[in-house]
Amino acid sequence: MAKFLVELLGCTLPDKGRDSRFECKSQNYIGLKHVSKHRQGNMPQTLPFGSMFGPAGFNDNVYQSKEEGYGGLRYHDNNLVSGSLEALIQHLVPSVDHYPDRTYIFTFLLSSRLFLHPYELMSKVYQMFVEHQRLGDPHADKIRVRKIAPKIVQLLTEWTETFPYDFRDDRMMRSLKELTHRLTIGDEVCRKAVQQMMQGLIRKLAALSQYEELLVKINATVAERLTVLKTKPQSIQRDVLTVCNDAFSLAQQLTHIELERLSYIGPEEFVQAFVQKDPLVNNKSRFSDRKKANNLEVYVEWFNRLSYLVATEICLPVKKKQRARVIEFFIDVARECFNIGNFNSLMAIISGMNMSPVSRLKKTWAKVKTAKFDILEHQMDPTSNFYNYRTALRGAMQRSITAHTSREKIVIPFFSLLIKDIYFLNEGCSNLLPNGHVNFEKFWELAKQVSEFMTWKQVECPFERDRKVLQYLLTAPVISEDALFLASYESEGPENNMEKDSWKSLRSALLGRV
Image (tube, rainbow, N blue to C red; front, side, top):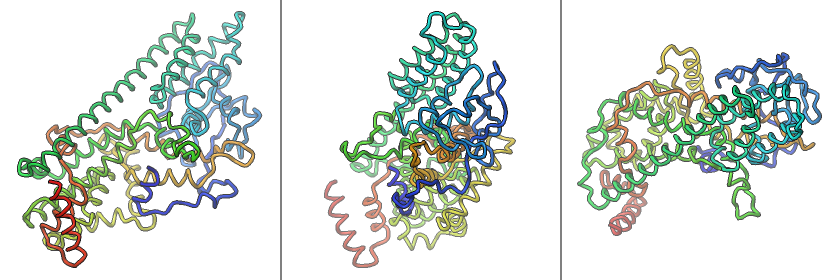
């Protein structure tokens, strides 16, 4: 999938062999800074994702740990840059006088799945906790256990809240229940905290299951309506303008869909999308059983659907005047998406209008006032690594930070480019250093990028839902690229021999099937 997205953007894949020194090429130095001693018995505040990383990429409110000199961890200028896997796990597990900073917890839980399965990590956390607190010993210090138990519960709460899909694995749920059972023996406060944590986890997993069931129903409806369109074209009379002729309203409903689909993407899905294939195992991912959700792929499919829906709406009208009207309408919708901060729908609309079956309709485009479209294309111009778009994105991010209304908080990035950025970060830096240490400097940068996304996806859409418009956007039939070309040729005839040959071939193939 990663390769597909990069090729979709017209980018070349990096040469994995060029970084022989295993050095991270990131311009920003990312690290975790230990600056203050954690007070015994106090629990750290759960920070919002937006405040996890400072401008330099690390959090300034990090707790000094007595494990700072623990064998296997390496610091540079007081920043953690690498460590053995076992030492990093050790740093994750709380003790009486140590609780890892939330920045570290998020970064390690995100990246550790590149080296071991989440249930294996949970098992190691359990084992280290038992060893450190001597819970296997009937004469264990109960006071010591009561000091550490709330911190372990806090760690587990961070895990279940941020990476709930890990717990779709029965092995994870078993380990979680076993560990929390031992933590809560004779401790009513911990028991209530664990109960609250489990209720939150169950709600998240139930919501994901309901969402997946809804997607199945939507896809079934799409397939059914496409079949009707192919067999009885005249039976489907509605087009986008009959459903919603107000550009701002349509942009609002597109934003509803974007934010809903963003909200279900787990941060781990970015990492798992780029796990290397093992050529010795039938090209299957070595960690294929780790994938517990497909929300990232679903979101990419939505982008493609919207692009094809735009192209379908433009190519199907018989009259040139109607086609021009649809184009101008979608230009206005795209402009409203830009103003809202919905860059993904904006780019999908532009992509749809730039598809060859649409762009070749010269007589239609001659009737369109394209000045607004030219401005939008300039904003999303891919040259200089999408410099104009990135400038606009930074503006939207700044607006979100200082927002006074929920509408101002909306930041929906051009998703394929976000994935491309993360992909190149992954490809440009090695996971392991020559000494066998985990390259944690790389994972700080990875976590910083993903944490920005986590902030954006938590925004609730402030606009009123229009069920009729939403249903149309999600289930209206879209036609294939070949069918789009055929419709385009039927509207404006072939201009050269190559187009004539293509038209004859498509008529023979498509109309022959019908």
